[in-house]
Image 1 (cartoon, rainbow, N blue to C red):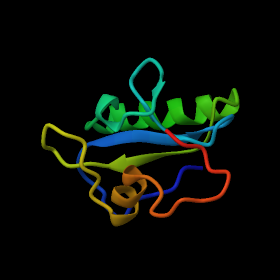
Image 2 (image 1 turned 90 degrees about the vertical axis):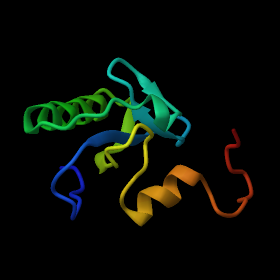
Image 3 (image 1 turned 120 degrees about the vertical axis):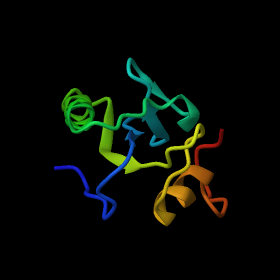
Length: 102
């Protein structure tokens, strides 16, 4: 079951962590990308349900782990509305020993 946001309306993108590298990835509509700007944005209840199902399917075939939908602004760029996602999009705030780098 995917995590649920407190924000109930508006567009969403699908994010997860790549299973092999642990890197944050975003669903583009056909593949996973490390760039949030390439993320497929959906808005209708039907599209949101389909995107949620895609995340679950990708987890089932061990492509990603922890897939969930992120509410984003309606502007042209991907701007997460929740603080957790803004921090996550910015990457680690400190360097960690052995961390995967860009």
